[in-house]
Image (cartoon, rainbow, N blue to C red):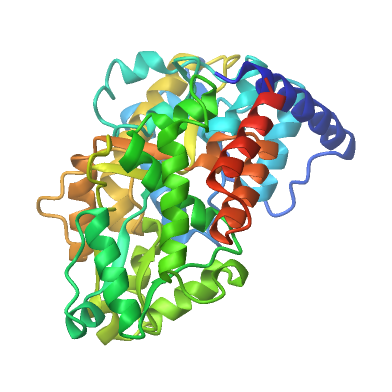
Length: 442
């Protein structure tokens, strides 16, 4: 998998690590909940655990973590978990610094895909396939644990998950006699009906570019199937695959129809979301991290929240993709250090943590876990319940393209997306630019 750019990323990461080490670790604001050394017997073992959810900024996450640790220590009286907590950016910096001396904590947090590369190439993260084939077998939503694999070996266990539904305003749909689309042709009919009535069909803030990428990714999936885009990125396929060029053509047809809000390439995502919230646009494609906006955020009028519903991205007639395949991605996950002195206990802890997080995160923090959730008896807004049930039936999860790519290629992809939506390049040029960028890293 992308061995060429692995080397590039690893080399850059090592340079960055030494630079950061020279500057010293910035531990300002870190919290140390260590209890090491207290009442420990000679046989006791200590797991060092570093995470990124401080009480001040992530209170609900913080409390769940503490309760899981308390429960684990109760069940394992000879094991103590030493906790260090830092904010997001401080956490990333300290992880790099610790890696320069191969002194990672026994358990820590990581991200999928490109973030893993320097640590895996440096033999710092332990393989976790034995856990996936054991106690956690079939527990994860398909496609989530896979995002933490390199060359078919898994180095992280995901905790969070986001997918990307198509939200719509049912009141606007009803007022203009628009049916909820289940096929791409029906979506075009809905767009045309709304446009003819003077209603903005879709809110899109494509100044951020990843927002447009999600539209392209779904069309690629529905036309060419779940692997066509992944294959282009990992070089077993090509962006010049006819399905991917067809997806780019469909993007430009939507633009030509007036599907998106005026000035979309100059609007940020938050600005575009404002049009949807103010009921000035009928549809909005966005990840489930915005679910509180449509369910529990009392800053948004109740009448608006009652009008928001969602549908899965429509299928394309004759296409290879199915309606249960989602664009999305896991959030943070857990790693175990390869050189941990307590690797067996660390693996037991991450297994315990993943199971307990899956039971509590959605009810206690509104966070959708990467593990499957039994929704029977759970007290949540109906939209959460419906999406969790959809996830249990998911056939595939395609990780956000820019996350799959190296930083340099991701920039080319995102710039090309914006140019495609702006009709500044042809679908063929769109494909070639990405092919050239990927080939340069091989």
